[in-house]
Length: 278
Image 1 (cartoon, rainbow, N blue to C red):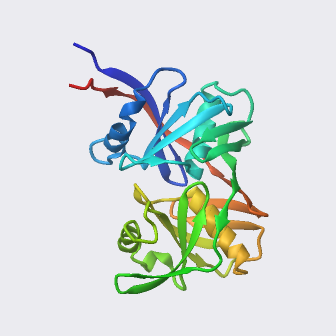
Image 2: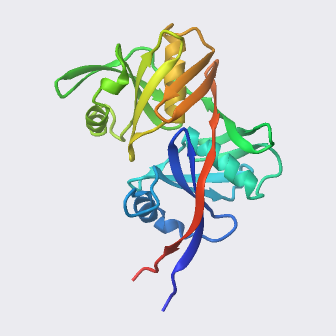
Image 3: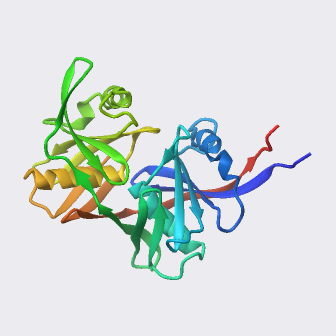
């Protein structure tokens, strides 16, 4: 009888956007079971609790590779918050020797730079998301009894930005975000950012992510929303602070090349068993 496989993991978060991280460079991982394990481990009552699963993998195109699955087991291309945490994970496990390196993601190779605190510990990272796109003219959509202006965006994954006149905390994010996942305008689902421009020159944002539901933060979504705000003349730019439920992200909008900076933290580490398939 095959015994259970014990897998070391780290739970990490960036602005409350949390993932289970596994070092698949140090030890073999049953990658074919990743969708199933992402669903089980992400469960906040019967699992570890997370927005998804991230594997640190070898790469032939960059220093290391990143593969991610959402909480429902669907494959993701990239996550800005997840990428910052992966950069910290890779450095602290000795798979890279410098604080600046490249990571191969499902959306292509991205550059990262770790940020250290006064004691020299890794506190966060800056991530170059590459050439992010957003459409200035919104799609006018009917969702239930509402008319929504949705700006399509792309940061290696699909986005829709909805600019609100009022605080997003009073908006039905779950209901509208869920409805947009099956809307004909987004046949592959979409990450939806509900944003408000604040008087202090920042953005307030809530996000509904495809495959995970509402999350505390979305780094790529913050980048798309910030780029829209600058290009639409809602904010002067090029630097925009985005206030998320789990913390703040700083976005630099430079001719379509976006860099996001924010925290990366290890919540806890442990081991979990993977039972053999029957």
